Length: 229
Image 1 (tube, rainbow, N blue to C red):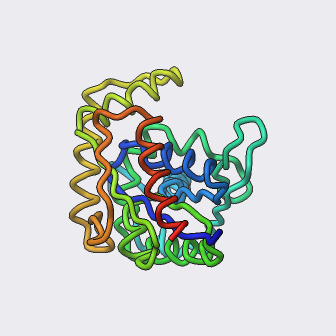
Image 2: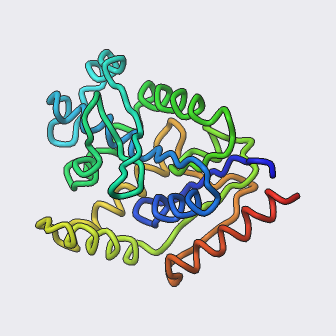
Image 3: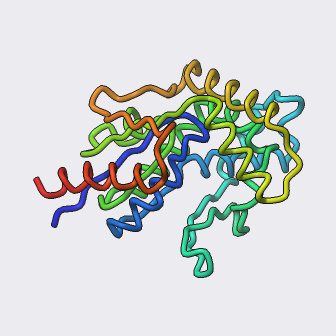
């Protein structure tokens, strides 16, 4: 059975990673979380005091890009791949609000995106992969056999993110998260470098009223139709 490349794009907090991970598990494909790569780069910038009041010291960050090493390593306990930054497991830290509030400005930097895209394309040369992000179907893998564009309403996405962070005992407010969702949507869709766009041949998956099981089954049907062609 042939292997294909599956590109999953869409808005923040719409469940791209969750669906892509489960789809990869079902198909026995490799999952690559491109968003985690930008989050790791953002964490690097925060740790090096390159972000102050939402403003990124772009010149210094660009000069330090060769100091950023991002890897994905399988975690036996969670049975998922964790994100590692320069030899340290940062999977939990990159999901926290400080990174979420600053990742979009970092991701708009042309040189940052070029570095991440090069890493992503190298990871996907052998097919049999699923990658999610903002520009996977339009920039990273424009020839992907299956492209999925995921979305959901702002309120639904904010509620999901709120529930996730509260479950992790983080002190957050729904209003702050909704504001962050709206801000990230605007930045993602209006940045000059690789803005969030639906690829012309992408299939739309609005999961505002779907359960995780329902959206996974939808994606499995679409993937198997193409794999078996």
